Image (tube, rainbow, N blue to C red; front, side):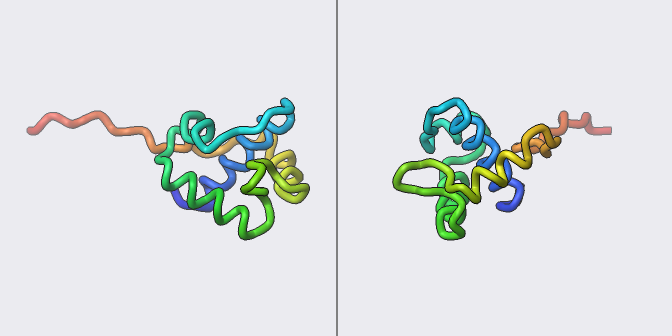
Amino acid sequence: MDRGQLSIHVLCAMTTHQRKGSRCTLEDLVAELGVRRPDVRSVVSALHREGYVDLQRMSLTLAGFAIGTSLRGQPLTAARRQRCAPRAAA
């Protein structure tokens, strides 16, 4: 998965937590998305640099919340690729 797709998943997950009135941690995002911790950390840092996430409070800014809310209900690609079943040798 590329960073653009992962950032969409992170925004949607953080929006869900924020709508419930709770904040999510990095570990929550890793467990929910099933993606490696360094990948999630780098995407959250990039979203912070772009002004969509407040990293100190681990919450969305107004712009990040607006994007996450607009993506609600939209079909997202899977966070991880499905593994193909091994093929028998001919």
